[in-house]
Length: 310
Image 1 (cartoon, one colour):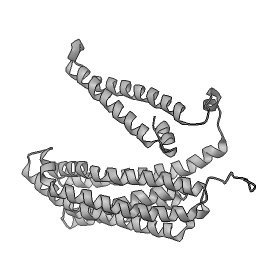
Image 2 (image 1 turned 135 degrees about the vertical axis):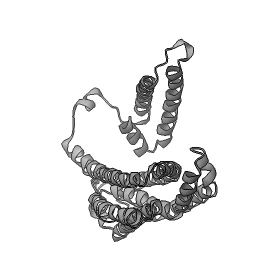
Image 3 (image 1 turned 90 degrees about the vertical axis):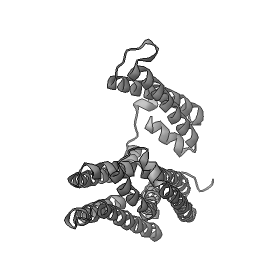
Image 4 (image 1 turned 45 degrees about the vertical axis):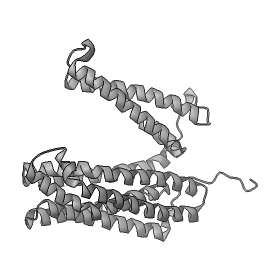
């Protein structure tokens, strides 16, 4: 399903993926309600009901998105296309996919270590982190959306050998992304206590979470910086630099600094959030200068198929 979503997005049909995802969630919630609570004469299955609803909703969504792909894509897809492979194309896909997965693995591992540090601070600190990140995730969504959109546009421009257009597109997207991220951050900070009150009535958690959400003015623009620039570098085929910087920044800066500020100096969660900010901005600025160097122009994976006489 994710593969088909990517195919449709790359061809400009981003709304189809969105609508099918919404459709899948509606089915998931409906079947969940029936099987968890035993509605309409069905037995109460609890957690098992959630598993069943997940399987059914994803299967239905897969069938729907496949039918949409066959209608949208101008190429005629045959059964043999699923049974044969092109090693050259697979190598190109893996050249982008493996570094992207490695970077995510590096991030997840570093977050696991930092979560263990936060656990040392107590259950309240761990709960505060979860609730605060849940609120922050809504800011991240806009950065992800802008990153994916920019990645598609730059992928098309790079494939057409419009390197100047691709270069300018990233700078334009960054301006829009910073404006949007800052606007959402202002909105969330203004209602931060009310948003945290949705999850808990614990005054200590709400107070600390409110302080952490104020950091999003600095943290989230840096995260958006990363999401947009790194996605653009991947679209251009320049994939290894982001993995190298992930290892250097996450494990050489973020994890040690989080321990030093949060645990050793006793600053707690604010100290760990400062480490997040430093990590995001160091990687973001480094990736930006990589883009400015235009070294990615030599990393393009897609070869020009247009003949000289065309």
